[in-house]
Length: 402
Image (cartoon, rainbow, N blue to C red; front, top):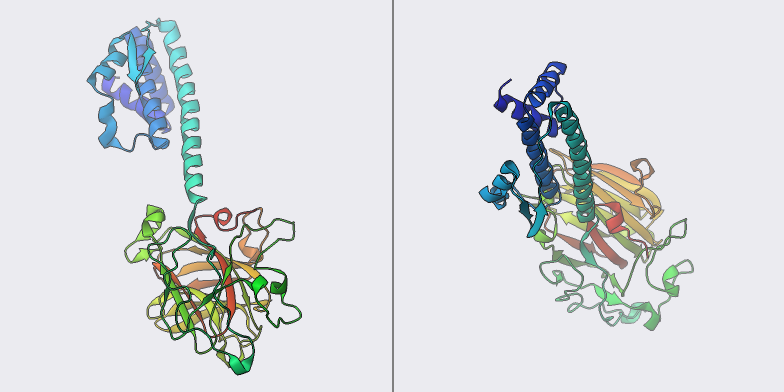
């Protein structure tokens, strides 16, 4: 076996490629044949483990940056210089000649070290990756001053036609303020300062929207909440800051690259459970004219139960309705897996907050036409409250516990 072939086998071993028994025996014989080769193997192992850890930790981005290991540093490794400069620190190196009887032991020991270092590097990479996924990419808690709530009496009912959320720019992960684009506007409400003729079962008389799961975990929430307009309707929209989302989610046409996963959640409660007379209020991503997803109270479900439906060239497709009335406050959590062709959407209602829920426990699951999205819209022609809108890469990022 020549030197070049031996180095290739060492590299293959360090990259976790299996060696045949014949290759392992030949490599062992090559190391034992000359004490200098033990030094060469040690150098190869040290360099490989150093680069692996830095690459996996994101410290050394790529091959173009390998110039940081310049010739003098490589010389220090290969020629036994007294010290190696690593990140500005002087690391002593004592060149040691190994006898034939210890060469194989050194190689095996160094290989074990590389295995441990590689595992540490993988662990660092895994932690960094999970940390990025657990980050919330966009959030809106509607922490704005309350607007004047229209009178509830029919005879003097005048819903605002201007103002509303127009120009409000709180939260994070957005590229522009909220825009009101229809004949009426949504408003910010603080029911503690309003006299409202609540229905007997309406929990909003006791405070703002919130959620506590069956195990006592409480969803993080703050501020006031949005209330959509009555007939004819309000459309309240906002665009994401695309760069706030990982590159893996970004594709041509916006967010939703094939292979990516997005989670989003929000609190909601409608003023009436029924959806008779086409009462609707929902959050939508994507576009009605092309494709997208609606989650909320849909006019196509007269019962008014919380519902989800795909969009395709103006039509609702694959509509799925839950058994939960829209007159009850809920936490709706949606996961979309973007795939070549139809996307897979799963919607949970009031899931436990301490662990990612199983798809088998979902309230609704539906295929959604292939789509991309750049923002959200909240459509309504019936008053419904929305709050705590979150987009993230994991369940935990969109359902944080207080």
